[in-house]
Length: 132
Image (cartoon, rainbow, N blue to C red; front, top):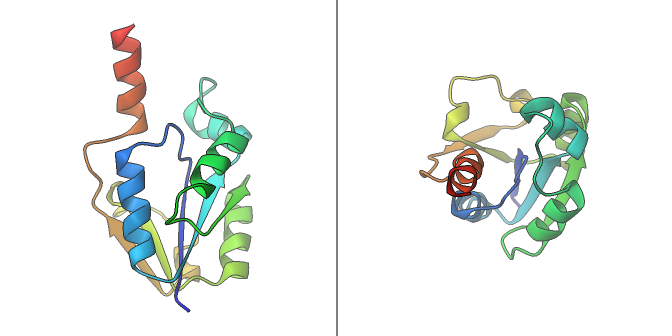
């Protein structure tokens, strides 16, 4: 069985997220999505984030047929523990991570970069702010 892992915030799920998750699932048999806790999202993205709570983000991701399991992590160390325990064959990251440090990259045999679409959570939030 080929195992795949994707990690991120997955706040305000949009088409780009879905396309990346479907791509990740197509690379293997079992897809684990690791998501940042609310505390960690606030630390990384600011006090106004996340828009959706970790409980809601986890629920939504678990409802997708391409996602087999969802786990929360609160630090780089916890993400590395998840990767080590799960033992994925492949990690998928958005193409915006090309050339950047990828947490857990050394723990996975292959890392694939998904060419992101024009969709992003930041753009969605900005559109809502501008609209209102």
